[in-house]
Length: 110
Length: 112
Image 1 (spheres, rainbow over the protein chains, first blue to last red):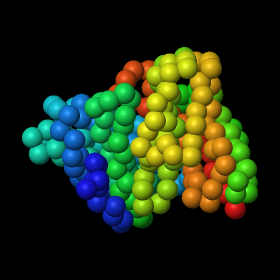
Image 2 (cartoon, each protein chain N blue to C red):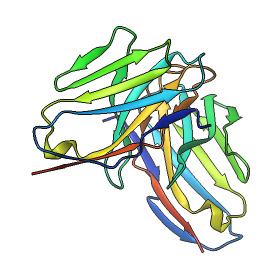
Image 3 (cartoon, rainbow over the protein chains, first blue to last red):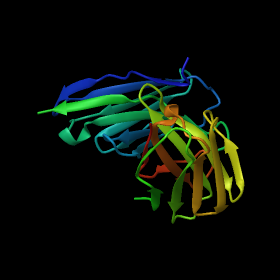
């Protein structure tokens, strides 16, 4: 079983749609959680950190459920520019170790 | 953007040759990491460093070595490149253990 599992998609949605990504992690000792975004042939870039209380950044909302070891990302009012691969990340169990999911591909079309 | 550069950005080499990839940061961050990214596997940690001359293995360290003689530079060496090491290599930095990592632009390595 992979340490961090994501639905690889692809998700194809029209502009303006709301889309949700889910992710599960297997290591209950994980302490830090993130969503990264990766454009084609580019490096991963931090989208947002994920906190137990949930957090929102504009159109993006992240939630963490420690009991279920589940992380989610909600994107509202999708834009063409949101098309990318979204990586779920768990870490904090040992020296700098972040474990990445394989990513969920999102394509937003006109 | 975090001040991280990687060199070279692209390299084609032959099986059996040594290859060194360089990661340079201007952020004075303590932690530096080398990952490889392959289809179907996502990002996997090769080696990491938690200070000058302090390094340790990640999950896919076989066939790779690293060195860190200065805070700003972290070198990844393939002593004898194999075709299975064809990949995209990313360097990352972090100011604190387990904290957000910032990635360099990557190096595309092809081993023929």
